[in-house]
Length: 155
Image (cartoon, rainbow, N blue to C red):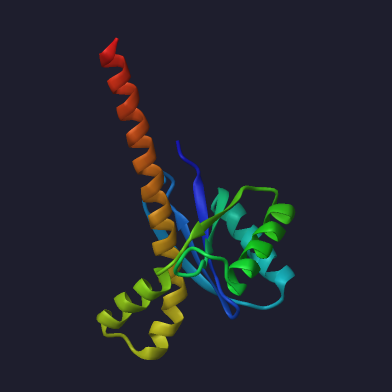
């Protein structure tokens, strides 16, 4: 059975959070974390990881539009390294280009107030990030299984 995955949309003021279901199919948003001190933020993530039995963390990597590093992507990479050392688990950087834009577009279409949109945007971005990651994993598994099935037919 696939293990749960915890996703983080890293921001300077807030951390958007999401977790996968036990089957690794769907992403569910968690309460957004207002940033405090780095150590407290990492402790909070560690507690969530334990509570949901997450085996890995996927951290949104905000690359530039051409895939180049940015100041924020370097900050995220440094945060990922701190998580790896402290929590002793795999932390994967995942290209999150346009997830925040997509989250805001979705929320604008929902008709909720600007203040509620602002509070929900980080959580929605984390859900989109994780769902994209889960979909890619599912597609890779299906492709491998298809290749194995075809290899068996060729014999």
